[in-house]
Length: 255
Image 1 (cartoon, rainbow, N blue to C red):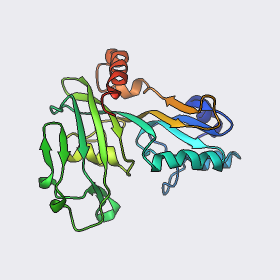
Image 2: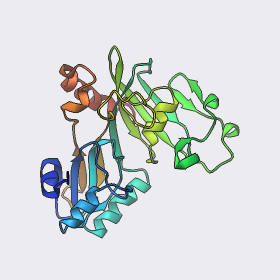
Image 3: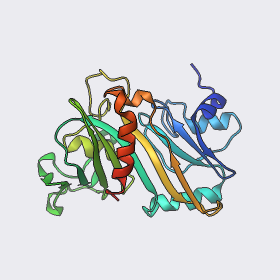
Image 4: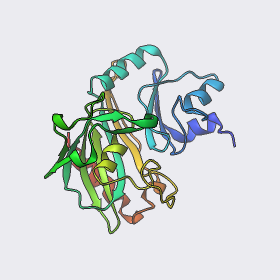
C-alpha cells in the first residue's frame, strides 16, 4: 500500500517554520537513500516538496527526524552535527543484563564483510571497567576505524528489559545498535542482532534534538518527540510517564 505524503506529514509533524520541518517518523519507513524502499525524501519530492535531511535515523528506528527546506539552513544545522555540538538523545529498550546506572561505551567502529558495521576490534578484546567499555589501541583491527562514543543512563529496570536514555557523542551509522549489542545488551527487536522474530518493531527511538538556529528568536531549535504507546509495549505501559520524567532528569548527568 502506497504511503500518502500529506497524511504522513500531518500526523507526524513536530515542528515547522520557513526553514525546517521536524517529523516524528514511524518505525519501518526510511528517511532517504534506501535501496528498494520508498523513503520520506522521495515521498515529499513526488508531492512537490524538496526536503534536505539534516541527519539520519535507521528505517527500524522511530522518532525525531529533522529536515531543512532550504540549503542555507541545511548547511548551518549539518555543521553542528559534524562538529558534534548537536544535542541528541535517544531511548532504547534492551535485555536486562545488569547495566550500571550510567556508563560510556567508547568503542571505535569499522565496516566488515557485506558492509556490516562492527566494533573495530575482536569481541574478546573489549574491556569493561566499572561504567566504561573500551579497547586498547594495540587491539584494533588492521582496518580503518572511526572513533565512536555513546553515553547512557539506566532509566527503568524491569524483569526482562531495561530502558536506557542515550546520548551518542558521535553519529556513526548503526552506532547505538552496534555499541549495545557488542557489549552484551542488544536492543529488543533489532533485526541486526535479534533473530527471534518475536517482536513487531525495534525498540530504539530518536527522542530529542537541540541545535542553534540563527533565523529563530531566540536562536535555538529544541525539539522532542516522545515515543508512542507502541514503544512501551514490551514493558508495563503504566510506567511510561514516570520513565520519561526520569529520563529527562538523567540526561543532565550524561552530557
